[in-house]
Length: 486
Ligand code: NAP
Image (tube, rainbow, N blue to C red; front, top):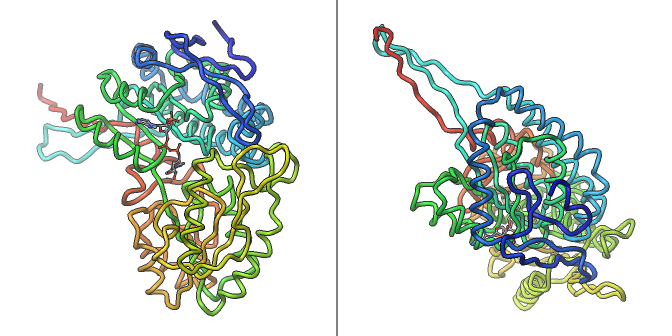
Protein backbone atom coordinates (compact mmCIF):
# COMPACT_ATOMS: atom_id res chain seq x y z
CA UNK A 1 0.00 0.00 0.00
CA UNK A 2 2.06 2.97 -1.18
CA UNK A 3 1.33 6.43 0.25
CA UNK A 4 -1.71 5.10 2.08
CA UNK A 5 -1.17 7.00 5.31
CA UNK A 6 -2.61 10.28 4.16
CA UNK A 7 -4.50 12.34 6.73
CA UNK A 8 -4.13 11.83 10.45
CA UNK A 9 -4.61 8.09 10.49
CA UNK A 10 -1.10 6.77 10.20
CA UNK A 11 0.33 3.42 9.26
CA UNK A 12 3.69 1.83 9.92
CA UNK A 13 6.32 1.92 7.16
CA UNK A 14 8.09 -1.42 6.74
CA UNK A 15 10.15 -2.54 3.75
CA UNK A 16 8.84 0.36 1.62
CA UNK A 17 5.15 -0.40 2.34
CA UNK A 18 2.59 1.25 4.61
CA UNK A 19 1.14 -1.40 6.90
CA UNK A 20 -1.26 -2.07 9.75
CA UNK A 21 0.02 -4.08 12.73
CA UNK A 22 -0.27 -7.84 12.22
CA UNK A 23 -2.72 -7.90 15.15
CA UNK A 24 -4.82 -5.17 13.49
CA UNK A 25 -4.76 -3.17 16.74
CA UNK A 26 -4.77 0.63 16.61
CA UNK A 27 -4.73 3.41 19.21
CA UNK A 28 -5.97 6.97 19.19
CA UNK A 29 -3.74 10.00 19.36
CA UNK A 30 -5.00 12.96 21.43
CA UNK A 31 -4.53 16.69 21.29
CA UNK A 32 -3.07 17.66 24.71
CA UNK A 33 -4.62 21.16 24.46
CA UNK A 34 -8.21 20.05 23.95
CA UNK A 35 -8.34 16.35 24.76
CA UNK A 36 -9.83 15.68 21.31
CA UNK A 37 -8.81 12.73 19.17
CA UNK A 38 -6.67 13.88 16.26
CA UNK A 39 -5.93 10.54 14.62
CA UNK A 40 -4.77 7.01 15.22
CA UNK A 41 -1.86 4.67 14.55
CA UNK A 42 -1.23 0.91 14.67
CA UNK A 43 -0.05 -0.74 17.87
CA UNK A 44 2.79 -3.05 16.89
CA UNK A 45 3.61 -6.41 18.42
CA UNK A 46 7.10 -7.87 18.56
CA UNK A 47 6.34 -9.70 15.29
CA UNK A 48 5.92 -6.33 13.50
CA UNK A 49 9.20 -5.07 14.95
CA UNK A 50 10.92 -8.29 13.85
CA UNK A 51 9.51 -7.81 10.33
CA UNK A 52 10.88 -4.26 10.26
CA UNK A 53 14.30 -5.48 11.43
CA UNK A 54 14.22 -8.17 8.72
CA UNK A 55 13.47 -5.52 6.09
CA UNK A 56 16.26 -3.28 7.38
CA UNK A 57 18.63 -6.24 7.49
CA UNK A 58 17.86 -7.21 3.88
CA UNK A 59 18.40 -3.61 2.77
CA UNK A 60 21.62 -3.14 4.73
CA UNK A 61 24.28 -4.61 2.40
CA UNK A 62 23.07 -2.92 -0.80
CA UNK A 63 22.72 0.43 1.03
CA UNK A 64 26.13 0.17 2.72
CA UNK A 65 27.72 -0.75 -0.64
CA UNK A 66 26.51 2.43 -2.35
CA UNK A 67 29.05 5.22 -2.69
CA UNK A 68 28.87 7.97 -0.11
CA UNK A 69 27.77 10.33 -2.88
CA UNK A 70 24.85 8.03 -3.76
CA UNK A 71 23.78 7.82 -0.11
CA UNK A 72 23.95 11.57 0.30
CA UNK A 73 21.51 12.31 -2.54
CA UNK A 74 18.23 11.08 -0.97
CA UNK A 75 19.29 12.73 2.29
CA UNK A 76 19.58 16.04 0.47
CA UNK A 77 16.20 15.49 -1.23
CA UNK A 78 14.64 14.69 2.15
CA UNK A 79 15.98 18.01 3.49
CA UNK A 80 14.36 19.89 0.61
CA UNK A 81 10.99 18.11 0.91
CA UNK A 82 10.87 18.55 4.68
CA UNK A 83 11.44 22.30 4.29
CA UNK A 84 8.68 22.44 1.63
CA UNK A 85 6.27 20.65 3.99
CA UNK A 86 7.18 22.60 7.12
CA UNK A 87 3.75 24.19 7.59
CA UNK A 88 1.83 20.93 7.21
CA UNK A 89 4.16 18.98 9.52
CA UNK A 90 4.32 21.77 12.12
CA UNK A 91 0.53 21.74 12.26
CA UNK A 92 0.48 17.98 12.92
CA UNK A 93 3.12 18.46 15.61
CA UNK A 94 1.17 21.18 17.42
CA UNK A 95 -2.01 19.12 17.25
CA UNK A 96 -0.48 16.05 18.90
CA UNK A 97 2.25 17.60 21.08
CA UNK A 98 0.84 21.01 22.01
CA UNK A 99 3.80 23.33 21.40
CA UNK A 100 3.02 26.73 19.82
CA UNK A 101 2.87 26.59 16.04
CA UNK A 102 5.82 28.98 15.62
CA UNK A 103 7.97 26.67 17.79
CA UNK A 104 6.79 23.66 15.81
CA UNK A 105 7.84 25.33 12.54
CA UNK A 106 11.22 26.19 14.02
CA UNK A 107 11.61 22.57 15.09
CA UNK A 108 10.83 21.26 11.60
CA UNK A 109 13.48 23.55 10.12
CA UNK A 110 15.96 22.47 12.81
CA UNK A 111 15.12 18.83 12.01
CA UNK A 112 15.74 19.48 8.31
CA UNK A 113 19.22 20.78 9.09
CA UNK A 114 20.33 17.32 10.25
CA UNK A 115 19.33 15.89 6.86
CA UNK A 116 21.23 18.62 5.03
CA UNK A 117 24.31 18.48 7.22
CA UNK A 118 24.66 14.68 7.10
CA UNK A 119 24.00 14.61 3.34
CA UNK A 120 27.27 16.54 3.21
CA UNK A 121 29.10 14.72 6.00
CA UNK A 122 28.27 11.33 4.42
CA UNK A 123 31.14 12.02 2.04
CA UNK A 124 33.70 12.49 4.83
CA UNK A 125 33.92 9.10 6.51
CA UNK A 126 37.70 9.01 6.29
CA UNK A 127 40.11 6.22 7.21
CA UNK A 128 43.73 6.42 8.39
CA UNK A 129 47.09 4.87 7.73
CA UNK A 130 49.42 4.28 10.67
CA UNK A 131 53.21 3.77 10.44
CA UNK A 132 53.85 0.03 10.77
CA UNK A 133 56.47 -1.62 12.99
CA UNK A 134 57.89 -3.83 10.22
CA UNK A 135 59.06 -2.72 6.75
CA UNK A 136 56.93 -5.30 4.95
CA UNK A 137 53.69 -4.30 6.69
CA UNK A 138 51.14 -1.52 6.32
CA UNK A 139 48.43 -0.56 8.81
CA UNK A 140 45.11 0.72 7.55
CA UNK A 141 42.11 1.85 9.59
CA UNK A 142 38.69 2.02 7.96
CA UNK A 143 35.28 2.94 9.36
CA UNK A 144 32.28 0.80 8.49
CA UNK A 145 28.55 1.01 9.32
CA UNK A 146 27.49 -0.77 12.52
CA UNK A 147 24.52 -2.46 10.77
CA UNK A 148 20.80 -2.23 11.46
CA UNK A 149 20.01 0.55 13.94
CA UNK A 150 17.01 0.57 16.30
CA UNK A 151 16.06 4.15 17.23
CA UNK A 152 13.69 5.18 20.04
CA UNK A 153 12.64 8.82 20.44
CA UNK A 154 10.70 11.01 22.93
CA UNK A 155 7.60 13.18 22.50
CA UNK A 156 9.05 16.59 23.34
CA UNK A 157 10.74 17.06 19.93
CA UNK A 158 8.67 14.81 17.65
CA UNK A 159 10.64 15.43 14.43
CA UNK A 160 14.11 16.77 15.23
CA UNK A 161 15.03 13.95 17.63
CA UNK A 162 14.23 11.57 14.74
CA UNK A 163 16.34 13.23 12.05
CA UNK A 164 19.19 13.70 14.56
CA UNK A 165 19.42 9.88 14.63
CA UNK A 166 18.21 8.85 11.17
CA UNK A 167 20.37 11.24 9.14
CA UNK A 168 23.79 10.23 10.54
CA UNK A 169 22.81 6.54 10.61
CA UNK A 170 21.92 6.61 6.91
CA UNK A 171 24.97 8.71 6.05
CA UNK A 172 27.17 6.10 7.75
CA UNK A 173 25.59 3.32 5.64
CA UNK A 174 23.30 1.86 8.32
CA UNK A 175 19.63 1.06 7.87
CA UNK A 176 17.08 2.08 10.50
CA UNK A 177 13.98 0.93 12.38
CA UNK A 178 12.51 3.84 14.32
CA UNK A 179 9.94 3.90 17.11
CA UNK A 180 8.55 7.34 17.99
CA UNK A 181 6.96 8.17 21.36
CA UNK A 182 3.42 6.96 21.87
CA UNK A 183 2.16 10.57 22.27
CA UNK A 184 3.55 11.85 18.97
CA UNK A 185 3.52 9.17 16.26
CA UNK A 186 1.75 11.27 13.61
CA UNK A 187 4.67 13.69 13.21
CA UNK A 188 6.85 10.61 12.67
CA UNK A 189 4.45 9.26 10.04
CA UNK A 190 4.62 12.63 8.24
CA UNK A 191 8.42 12.55 8.40
CA UNK A 192 8.49 9.04 6.93
CA UNK A 193 6.31 10.21 4.03
CA UNK A 194 9.09 12.72 3.37
CA UNK A 195 11.70 9.94 3.48
CA UNK A 196 9.59 7.79 1.14
CA UNK A 197 9.26 10.66 -1.33
CA UNK A 198 13.00 11.35 -1.10
CA UNK A 199 13.55 7.92 -2.68
CA UNK A 200 15.34 5.80 -0.10
CA UNK A 201 15.30 2.17 -1.27
CA UNK A 202 12.71 -0.10 0.45
CA UNK A 203 13.86 -1.30 3.89
CA UNK A 204 16.46 1.44 4.41
CA UNK A 205 14.14 3.36 6.75
CA UNK A 206 11.33 1.68 8.67
CA UNK A 207 8.78 3.02 11.15
CA UNK A 208 6.98 1.03 13.84
CA UNK A 209 4.42 2.54 16.23
CA UNK A 210 3.56 0.97 19.56
CA UNK A 211 4.67 0.56 23.15
CA UNK A 212 8.24 1.30 24.11
CA UNK A 213 8.62 -1.82 26.25
CA UNK A 214 7.52 -4.10 23.35
CA UNK A 215 9.80 -2.47 20.80
CA UNK A 216 12.66 -2.22 23.28
CA UNK A 217 12.49 -5.94 24.07
CA UNK A 218 12.71 -6.90 20.39
CA UNK A 219 15.53 -4.42 19.76
CA UNK A 220 17.52 -5.90 22.65
CA UNK A 221 16.99 -9.53 21.73
CA UNK A 222 17.01 -9.57 17.92
CA UNK A 223 20.50 -10.55 16.76
CA UNK A 224 20.04 -8.81 13.39
CA UNK A 225 19.98 -5.42 15.11
CA UNK A 226 23.48 -4.03 15.67
CA UNK A 227 22.85 -0.83 17.61
CA UNK A 228 20.27 0.93 19.76
CA UNK A 229 20.12 4.70 19.85
CA UNK A 230 17.78 6.11 22.47
CA UNK A 231 16.59 9.55 23.52
CA UNK A 232 14.37 9.74 26.57
CA UNK A 233 14.40 9.50 30.34
CA UNK A 234 17.41 8.34 32.34
CA UNK A 235 15.20 5.69 33.94
CA UNK A 236 14.36 3.95 30.63
CA UNK A 237 17.89 4.57 29.35
CA UNK A 238 19.31 2.60 32.29
CA UNK A 239 16.98 -0.33 31.53
CA UNK A 240 18.24 -0.40 27.93
CA UNK A 241 21.86 -0.16 29.05
CA UNK A 242 21.32 -3.17 31.33
CA UNK A 243 19.50 -5.10 28.60
CA UNK A 244 22.19 -4.38 26.03
CA UNK A 245 24.77 -6.32 28.08
CA UNK A 246 23.40 -9.72 27.03
CA UNK A 247 24.60 -9.37 23.42
CA UNK A 248 27.01 -6.45 23.99
CA UNK A 249 24.78 -4.40 21.72
CA UNK A 250 26.13 -0.98 20.69
CA UNK A 251 24.23 1.81 22.43
CA UNK A 252 23.94 5.60 22.37
CA UNK A 253 21.95 7.34 25.08
CA UNK A 254 20.59 10.90 25.15
CA UNK A 255 18.96 11.09 28.59
CA UNK A 256 17.59 13.55 31.11
CA UNK A 257 19.13 16.78 32.33
CA UNK A 258 19.03 19.30 35.16
CA UNK A 259 20.67 22.35 33.65
CA UNK A 260 22.20 25.06 35.83
CA UNK A 261 21.75 28.58 34.42
CA UNK A 262 24.30 30.83 36.12
CA UNK A 263 23.90 34.60 36.10
CA UNK A 264 26.86 36.69 37.35
CA UNK A 265 26.42 40.29 38.48
CA UNK A 266 28.30 41.65 35.44
CA UNK A 267 25.91 40.03 32.91
CA UNK A 268 23.74 42.19 30.67
CA UNK A 269 20.54 41.83 32.70
CA UNK A 270 18.00 42.69 30.02
CA UNK A 271 19.51 40.17 27.58
CA UNK A 272 19.98 37.54 30.30
CA UNK A 273 16.34 37.73 31.40
CA UNK A 274 15.24 37.21 27.78
CA UNK A 275 17.73 34.34 27.44
CA UNK A 276 16.41 32.78 30.64
CA UNK A 277 12.85 32.89 29.27
CA UNK A 278 14.00 31.36 25.96
CA UNK A 279 15.81 28.55 27.79
CA UNK A 280 13.23 27.88 30.50
CA UNK A 281 9.85 28.37 28.85
CA UNK A 282 10.37 26.97 25.33
CA UNK A 283 8.07 23.98 24.83
CA UNK A 284 6.45 24.85 28.21
CA UNK A 285 9.70 23.86 29.93
CA UNK A 286 9.58 20.33 28.52
CA UNK A 287 13.09 20.13 27.11
CA UNK A 288 16.09 18.15 28.28
CA UNK A 289 18.40 21.20 28.11
CA UNK A 290 16.11 23.83 29.61
CA UNK A 291 17.21 25.79 32.69
CA UNK A 292 16.30 23.77 35.78
CA UNK A 293 18.26 25.67 38.45
CA UNK A 294 18.73 29.38 37.90
CA UNK A 295 21.65 30.59 40.03
CA UNK A 296 21.73 34.37 40.39
CA UNK A 297 24.50 36.29 42.17
CA UNK A 298 23.05 37.69 45.42
CA UNK A 299 23.92 41.32 44.56
CA UNK A 300 21.48 41.32 41.60
CA UNK A 301 18.93 38.75 42.77
CA UNK A 302 16.09 41.16 43.63
CA UNK A 303 16.40 43.06 40.36
CA UNK A 304 16.68 39.87 38.32
CA UNK A 305 13.68 38.26 40.03
CA UNK A 306 11.50 41.33 39.48
CA UNK A 307 12.50 41.67 35.81
CA UNK A 308 11.99 37.97 35.14
CA UNK A 309 8.63 37.82 36.93
CA UNK A 310 7.43 40.92 35.03
CA UNK A 311 8.19 39.36 31.66
CA UNK A 312 6.92 35.91 32.62
CA UNK A 313 3.54 37.34 33.65
CA UNK A 314 3.20 38.70 30.12
CA UNK A 315 3.64 35.28 28.47
CA UNK A 316 0.47 34.07 26.77
CA UNK A 317 -0.83 30.61 27.67
CA UNK A 318 -3.17 28.70 25.38
CA UNK A 319 -3.73 26.27 22.55
CA UNK A 320 -0.58 26.26 20.40
CA UNK A 321 -2.74 26.77 17.30
CA UNK A 322 -3.84 30.24 18.53
CA UNK A 323 -1.68 33.07 17.24
CA UNK A 324 0.69 34.64 19.74
CA UNK A 325 0.64 31.77 22.26
CA UNK A 326 3.95 31.32 24.12
CA UNK A 327 3.08 28.43 26.46
CA UNK A 328 1.08 25.38 25.38
CA UNK A 329 -0.22 22.52 27.53
CA UNK A 330 1.88 19.98 29.38
CA UNK A 331 1.85 16.60 27.69
CA UNK A 332 -0.58 15.02 30.20
CA UNK A 333 -2.14 15.35 33.67
CA UNK A 334 0.57 13.28 35.32
CA UNK A 335 3.15 15.79 34.09
CA UNK A 336 1.05 18.63 35.51
CA UNK A 337 0.73 16.92 38.89
CA UNK A 338 4.50 16.46 39.05
CA UNK A 339 4.98 20.20 38.42
CA UNK A 340 2.37 21.05 41.06
CA UNK A 341 4.07 18.80 43.61
CA UNK A 342 7.45 20.44 42.97
CA UNK A 343 5.99 23.92 43.40
CA UNK A 344 4.09 22.93 46.57
CA UNK A 345 7.19 21.27 48.01
CA UNK A 346 9.27 24.40 47.33
CA UNK A 347 6.65 26.76 48.81
CA UNK A 348 6.27 24.59 51.90
CA UNK A 349 10.04 24.82 52.46
CA UNK A 350 10.25 28.61 52.19
CA UNK A 351 10.32 29.50 48.48
CA UNK A 352 8.53 32.72 47.46
CA UNK A 353 6.12 32.90 44.55
CA UNK A 354 7.07 35.72 42.16
CA UNK A 355 4.72 34.76 39.30
CA UNK A 356 2.22 32.03 38.35
CA UNK A 357 2.00 28.99 40.61
CA UNK A 358 -1.39 27.64 39.52
CA UNK A 359 -3.17 25.59 36.89
CA UNK A 360 -4.28 27.69 33.96
CA UNK A 361 -7.97 27.23 33.28
CA UNK A 362 -9.97 28.68 30.39
CA UNK A 363 -13.17 27.58 28.67
CA UNK A 364 -12.54 25.37 25.65
CA UNK A 365 -9.12 24.27 26.92
CA UNK A 366 -9.37 20.81 28.46
CA UNK A 367 -5.66 20.13 28.56
CA UNK A 368 -3.13 20.22 31.40
CA UNK A 369 -2.08 23.88 31.38
CA UNK A 370 0.12 25.44 34.06
CA UNK A 371 0.85 29.13 34.47
CA UNK A 372 4.45 30.10 33.78
CA UNK A 373 5.92 30.36 37.25
CA UNK A 374 8.87 32.03 38.97
CA UNK A 375 10.00 30.99 42.45
CA UNK A 376 12.67 32.85 44.44
CA UNK A 377 14.40 31.88 47.73
CA UNK A 378 14.86 28.35 46.44
CA UNK A 379 17.49 26.13 48.06
CA UNK A 380 18.90 22.61 47.78
CA UNK A 381 16.48 21.11 50.31
CA UNK A 382 13.68 21.41 47.72
CA UNK A 383 12.90 18.64 45.19
CA UNK A 384 12.96 21.13 42.33
CA UNK A 385 16.73 21.46 42.84
CA UNK A 386 17.42 17.80 42.11
CA UNK A 387 14.48 16.25 40.21
CA UNK A 388 14.17 17.13 36.50
CA UNK A 389 11.39 19.75 36.13
CA UNK A 390 9.52 19.14 32.90
CA UNK A 391 7.32 22.21 33.13
CA UNK A 392 7.19 26.02 33.06
CA UNK A 393 8.71 26.73 36.48
CA UNK A 394 11.80 28.88 36.99
CA UNK A 395 13.44 28.38 40.43
CA UNK A 396 15.89 31.13 41.47
CA UNK A 397 18.76 30.26 43.83
CA UNK A 398 21.13 32.91 45.21
CA UNK A 399 24.93 32.47 45.28
CA UNK A 400 27.89 34.61 46.37
CA UNK A 401 31.09 33.39 44.72
CA UNK A 402 32.29 31.71 41.54
CA UNK A 403 33.68 28.74 43.50
CA UNK A 404 30.43 28.26 45.36
CA UNK A 405 28.24 28.30 42.25
CA UNK A 406 30.50 25.89 40.34
CA UNK A 407 30.26 23.41 43.22
CA UNK A 408 26.48 23.81 43.41
CA UNK A 409 26.02 23.52 39.65
CA UNK A 410 28.02 20.27 39.57
CA UNK A 411 26.24 18.69 42.56
CA UNK A 412 23.90 16.52 40.49
CA UNK A 413 23.98 13.14 38.77
CA UNK A 414 23.05 14.88 35.50
CA UNK A 415 25.49 16.49 33.06
CA UNK A 416 23.74 17.53 29.85
CA UNK A 417 23.53 21.31 29.33
CA UNK A 418 24.66 24.26 31.44
CA UNK A 419 24.64 28.03 30.93
CA UNK A 420 26.84 30.91 32.07
CA UNK A 421 25.95 34.57 31.70
CA UNK A 422 28.78 37.05 32.22
CA UNK A 423 30.68 39.75 30.32
CA UNK A 424 33.99 38.75 31.91
CA UNK A 425 35.90 36.64 29.37
CA UNK A 426 38.24 35.11 31.95
CA UNK A 427 35.31 34.05 34.10
CA UNK A 428 33.47 32.65 31.06
CA UNK A 429 36.44 30.37 30.35
CA UNK A 430 37.13 29.42 33.96
CA UNK A 431 33.54 28.47 34.69
CA UNK A 432 32.94 26.68 31.34
CA UNK A 433 36.01 24.55 31.89
CA UNK A 434 34.99 23.56 35.41
CA UNK A 435 31.34 22.68 34.66
CA UNK A 436 30.84 18.90 34.44
CA UNK A 437 28.48 19.09 31.48
CA UNK A 438 28.55 18.05 27.83
CA UNK A 439 27.26 21.44 26.68
CA UNK A 440 27.96 24.95 27.99
CA UNK A 441 26.05 27.92 26.58
CA UNK A 442 28.03 31.06 27.38
CA UNK A 443 25.61 33.97 26.96
CA UNK A 444 23.69 31.55 24.71
CA UNK A 445 20.41 29.96 25.81
CA UNK A 446 19.89 27.87 22.66
CA UNK A 447 23.10 25.97 21.85
CA UNK A 448 21.65 23.06 19.78
CA UNK A 449 22.79 23.06 16.14
CA UNK A 450 23.24 20.28 13.58
CA UNK A 451 27.03 20.64 13.27
CA UNK A 452 27.98 20.49 16.98
CA UNK A 453 28.22 17.44 19.30
CA UNK A 454 25.17 17.25 21.57
CA UNK A 455 25.20 14.90 24.54
CA UNK A 456 25.62 14.45 28.24
CA UNK A 457 28.18 13.58 30.89
CA UNK A 458 27.38 11.43 33.93
CA UNK A 459 23.82 10.02 33.95
CA UNK A 460 22.73 12.28 31.09
CA UNK A 461 23.99 9.91 28.46
CA UNK A 462 26.56 8.03 26.42
CA UNK A 463 27.85 9.23 23.06
CA UNK A 464 27.07 12.33 21.01
CA UNK A 465 24.55 13.34 18.36
CA UNK A 466 25.18 16.02 15.77
CA UNK A 467 28.35 17.05 14.02
CA UNK A 468 31.05 14.64 12.93
CA UNK A 469 30.90 13.05 16.40
CA UNK A 470 27.29 12.04 15.69
CA UNK A 471 28.43 10.04 12.68
CA UNK A 472 30.99 8.12 14.76
CA UNK A 473 28.10 6.65 16.76
CA UNK A 474 27.06 4.59 13.71
CA UNK A 475 30.51 3.43 12.63
CA UNK A 476 32.72 0.56 13.72
CA UNK A 477 36.49 0.85 13.42
CA UNK A 478 38.29 -1.86 11.48
CA UNK A 479 42.07 -2.23 11.53
CA UNK A 480 43.59 -4.01 8.54
CA UNK A 481 47.17 -5.21 8.91
CA UNK A 482 48.60 -5.70 5.45
CA UNK A 483 51.63 -7.92 4.85
CA UNK A 484 53.31 -6.99 1.56
CA UNK A 485 55.24 -10.26 1.07
CA UNK A 486 52.26 -12.62 0.81
P1 NAP B 1 10.61 8.15 28.12
O1 NAP B 1 9.42 7.88 28.92
O2 NAP B 1 11.91 7.57 28.54
O3 NAP B 1 10.25 7.72 26.64
C1 NAP B 1 11.16 7.90 25.57
C2 NAP B 1 10.92 6.81 24.55
O4 NAP B 1 11.25 5.55 25.14
C3 NAP B 1 9.47 6.69 24.08
O5 NAP B 1 9.47 6.39 22.70
C4 NAP B 1 8.95 5.53 24.91
O6 NAP B 1 7.89 4.84 24.30
C5 NAP B 1 10.17 4.65 24.95
N1 NAP B 1 10.16 3.66 26.03
C6 NAP B 1 9.44 3.66 27.19
N2 NAP B 1 9.70 2.54 27.90
C7 NAP B 1 10.60 1.81 27.18
C8 NAP B 1 11.26 0.57 27.39
N3 NAP B 1 11.07 -0.15 28.49
N4 NAP B 1 12.11 0.14 26.43
C9 NAP B 1 12.32 0.87 25.33
N5 NAP B 1 11.73 2.05 25.06
C10 NAP B 1 10.89 2.53 26.00
O7 NAP B 1 10.89 9.72 27.98
P2 NAP B 1 9.87 10.85 27.53
O8 NAP B 1 8.98 11.15 28.67
O9 NAP B 1 9.26 10.52 26.21
O10 NAP B 1 10.86 12.06 27.26
C11 NAP B 1 11.27 12.92 28.24
C12 NAP B 1 12.69 12.58 28.70
O11 NAP B 1 13.56 12.58 27.58
C13 NAP B 1 13.24 13.61 29.66
O12 NAP B 1 13.93 12.98 30.68
C14 NAP B 1 14.19 14.41 28.77
O13 NAP B 1 15.22 15.06 29.48
C15 NAP B 1 14.71 13.36 27.85
N6 NAP B 1 15.23 13.93 26.60
C16 NAP B 1 16.58 13.89 26.40
C17 NAP B 1 17.11 14.45 25.25
C18 NAP B 1 18.60 14.45 25.01
O14 NAP B 1 19.00 14.73 23.90
N7 NAP B 1 19.42 14.12 26.00
C19 NAP B 1 16.27 15.03 24.31
C20 NAP B 1 14.91 15.04 24.54
C21 NAP B 1 14.40 14.46 25.70
P3 NAP B 1 6.38 5.10 24.75
O15 NAP B 1 6.07 6.47 24.30
O16 NAP B 1 5.64 4.05 24.01
O17 NAP B 1 6.32 4.95 26.24
